[in-house]
Length: 146
Length: 146
DNA sequence: GCTTTTTCTTTCGGGCATGAAGGAAATGTC
DNA sequence: GACATTTCCTTCATGCCCGAAAGAAAAAGC
Image 1 (cartoon, rainbow over the protein chains, first blue to last red):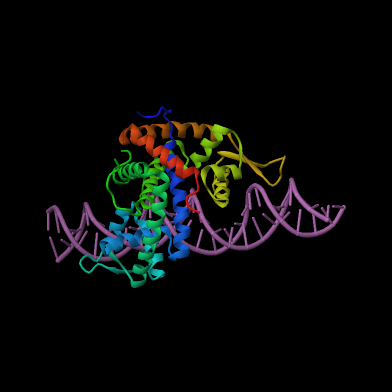
Image 2 (image 1 turned 180 degrees about the vertical axis):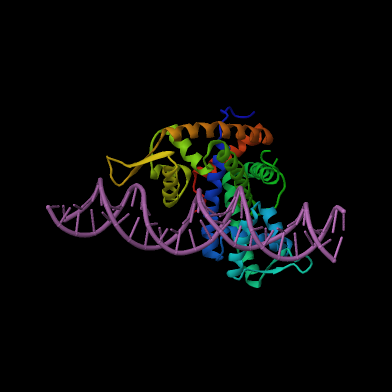
């Protein structure tokens, strides 16, 4: 049975705070051990898993607005993690692809985050981690409010 | 029984994406209907619930670094939502208190977020919302990693 | 062919957050 | 009382994200 609890607005605030803490911890380790930020790691994972992608695709998967992707990718290009070229098939589009350095950093980041994720899941417990995953997936993939 | 699932690092990324979407939706409604941002609403709620507070206390409760609180509160002072004065008992400290305008905006924001929270909980289901709340609370109140 | 509309990305201005470092007031120690 | 330490906040430089609007190329309509 569900636990008794007043209806309040804590879920919005709590998610914010939890994400901030998780991001801070991940960012710190990723920066010192892989030389990249957490935001950059997310892009690298996407490219590692699915190959080169257009700006719009990155925007959609990571739920980032287009200007955020422009800035993020620009910094990554400057850092030598990815390359960016106009799509020859549709010259409006820009295609982002991993460099050798980006691939290496992405793989290192993957190991780090797997480690942190395992620690987090252990702290939460398997059932709680699963339902957390499900709830967040739902929030991340459906419209919040009309 | 827990669902079969490979160990991956999705929890960190997912929390980030979900928080971004929630914050974006909340921010949009709060700005148009209450004239404040989501970050400002969090400060107002804290002050509404517990009365005037020092910068450090805001930093701790919201899991924000001190410089973030300085900037956030400064913008709120400029917007007339809060007042800031040095603590007479300890002149190192600065005490933040609601103005009439801040109280009004905070109450309006409370209604809005309660509404959005109810919609979110309905979408998740009561049990999932409860366990989400518990998991996030754990993350928000304990150390992530050594 | 030429104009209008749509699609994709960038520019712009600003809010929000971080780590590192600095300054002012309280406290501890002698 | 004087000095070192600690506590609390701010300043600085940077990164990340947002909404609004502009720019460029493709697609659609005529």
